[in-house]
Image 1 (spheres, helix red, strand yellow):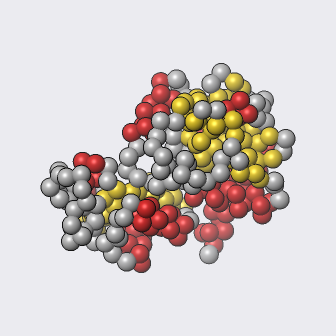
Image 2 (cartoon, helix red, strand yellow):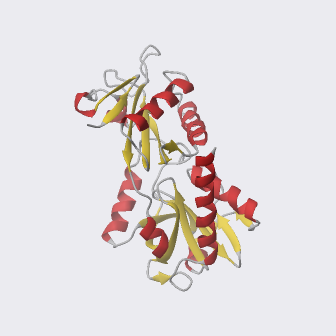
Length: 283
């Protein structure tokens, strides 16, 4: 039976419920994180929690407990559900209060929910590459906050799915921003390029790790605006996210990327990321 976290308690999922006046349910008034688990250990946990706390500050949402307590509960979830390879999902809303667009009183505590579930690494897709489509970015102007308001992302993913594609790569005008659930990189003339962190993208934890790995491996990286036509003509395209890690994109719209196979830079970054996972497990 699945065990979840409900505020400070680990409970059976069958015994858990959400109040109809939870502000996350009514307004999407909250934040979340998804964290990978390898060999029973959460990967890049501190980095994820740093972003979780930053998102909370950006929307004036007060943490209802100390960070150490929440981390302990999340590790308890992994153990209780016997997760070897999987993910943790944690969200926090502004609490339960009669519906009003104004914030509730400070006395209303935030609501925290989390669960841990098994999820294999996407090996076949990483080996073969995936396809994507370009879609207009219809999201709000604070994409740097990992909020629960994901309707534009959902619609973009559904558009990609209807087109038989894995991901939707979004753009504002001619400038690529990011995927519906990933950050986007291209390789052009041997240089790794990616959209710089700003309010228009979510600065991914895996994205930051990839930038670090590129530097460590001596591959040149430039953070700058990437145009849609530049992406379509790139030598390589790949996306990164917690769930996807380093995922090659071999086709965008009707355009084959490179020779239609994952390129050498992407392959080497996949290997470097694997070593980072292995290194974290050895700590």
